[in-house]
Image 1 (spheres, rainbow, N blue to C red):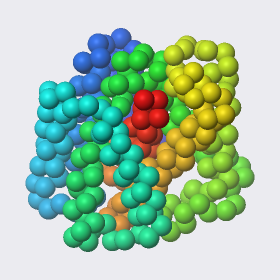
Image 2 (image 1 turned 90 degrees about the vertical axis):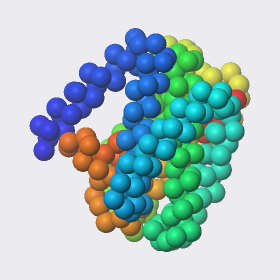
Image 3 (image 1 turned 30 degrees about the vertical axis):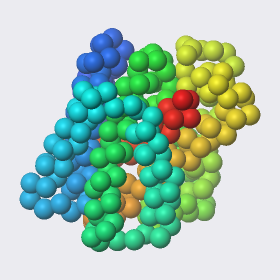
Amino acid sequence: MLKTRVITAIVLLAVLVPITLFAPVGAFGALIGFVVVFAAWEWGRLLKLNGAGPVAYAVLTGIVLIFSTWLGVASKPLYQMAGIFWVLAGPYVLLRKPSLAAGAWRGFLLFAGIVVFVACWHAVVDARTRGVAFVLSLLLVVWLADIGAYFAGKALGRHKLAPSISPGKTWEGAIGGWVAVIVIGAIAAATGFYAPTVFTAFVERLGWDRSFVAVSVLVAFSVVGDLFESLLKRQAGVKDSSGLLPGHGGVLDRIDAMLPVLPIALLMLG
């Protein structure tokens, strides 16, 4: 299992790193587009679309993504719609835990999923146009929150964060992830390391005090994204969103926390 996980990680890095660092924005956007389409396929599977339904849903998402770019659809309204979903529907679903396979919710989530994926694609491409360091720093928010939560949860975890959704997550872990992001973000902003980054951009636009709040909001929604996908999987009765990435699960398992963070971050930066 570990060997498979390592091999998959090496292959992914061999593809993602050169394209992120050196390829034109168009090539980077095309790669992220493939990622989004596969994630949409997994979303359709988790919502129990029958037969070729998940494939059709993924194709529809790809078509909407292409047309949103071709028609020059403004990114900000997409970020706003995705933000509304995560701010209102995300926590509601996590707290109330309605049956996501029920007719009304299922239809809503199928529609919302397209908005979420297309907004996420626009956000990551927008971030890439601001610079390689910028897009990497934005992803670093999610990675640091996850890594910090893992180690803090292992060492200090006592109080379950959402035991009925993801029993392994703890409040201590979530706080540890938040501390990791705040500390590294503060150092990056103070030193201007590889600026512009999302941390320097927040400080320049919002000042230190509101930047602290903004980064904290991003960390909170990285947790919401993670838990939301966990709830989808739990109600679908599966451990992973798919087996596309041997040893790692599916694409959604890797980008769940990024889905809310990317559009919300770009929305706050204007």
